[in-house]
Length: 217
Image (cartoon, rainbow, N blue to C red; front, side):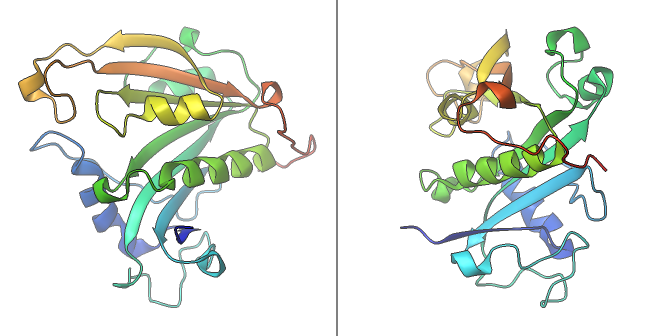
């Protein structure tokens, strides 16, 4: 089995994560990376080469035994984050593709997934699934009852639609992104890109368990 470790972010991760994320975009695009250090409502997880005993070695305060730097044997494979909101309007403000809170199902605490990217040569190793499953566990412990992602569905092998379908999400809204294939970094003969809103209610997924008294602090 592939050895993949999931850990908290370190201060030195910001630059390599930005490079990893922008490698998926058209040339000239940029992406500002937030690591969520010190923010109890924002949970960033990083996937790296490693074994199970390496997981979780870095704390939420960003301290590590490597002075916050990413070591050469700690190659970053992917990243994903979860941000908590109790107000649908605040979720809408955070979303990239949509700004209408009316698109969101009602929930007591939303868990908005963002910054979900896997290094191109690591696609197919289960990196995205590992990150998503651990964020589901984090969110459930915090009292999240609806996970959601406003995501870029595209024609590439690593389209997030496949990941969300496999993990019990329902795509409740889609808007086409109209552009020629020559301008798309993922599609080839025809651009099939869409902005999509995918949701997953915790109570509706068999096997999900969460403590009803879980803290939201």
